[in-house]
Image (cartoon, rainbow, N blue to C red):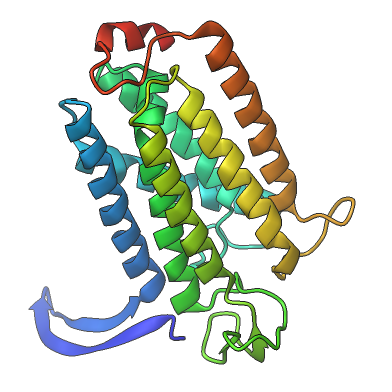
Length: 269
């Protein structure tokens, strides 16, 4: 795989006595991240249309994407102090998830849907966006691949940011498939009448279990009880998801039915 696409110099600008060449390298990770945001935006807009909600899906996804990137980078730097803040490599899934959730809750207040309802609306989009975003890890070969394998679909990354000539598990592809499946499950669940917060809890459970399992064949270092940092964060995600589902079923604050009144959902903020 290739982490950068080389673009020939298209033209040169001459400004204030300096020459600026327009062209150069385009990071494939950033390109795939853009694709992931577009896919998440489309799914979220379909949910808004289905539930007759007037909200700006493009603006919401843009804010959440930027917030998620910042959160993922900050978490990685805190977890690995030796790494540079502005390096192109190193993003922690849990940091992006946490800050992304906070950004979505804020957006719920902005659009007066209620924080929990906005999270429920965005759950299928988040799953799809995460899965598509893993294509960036695949194309850039940034070390998110797995351990050695003799399976016929094993891949090598000789030109990756973290190169390897060994045939390894293409874990980004696994996560893409699982992310799309989770998105489909949550989309279908969203058509049913469920208490506010339940879909978000189910997303936390499903995505946490998926990440926990894939870590067994990832190359991330083990830090505690034979588990990686991501696995520990996954356990936290599953526990939080179970607690949220239990709370949603016991309190039944509002409903996620397509024609539920927004006024009901606002109490969950």
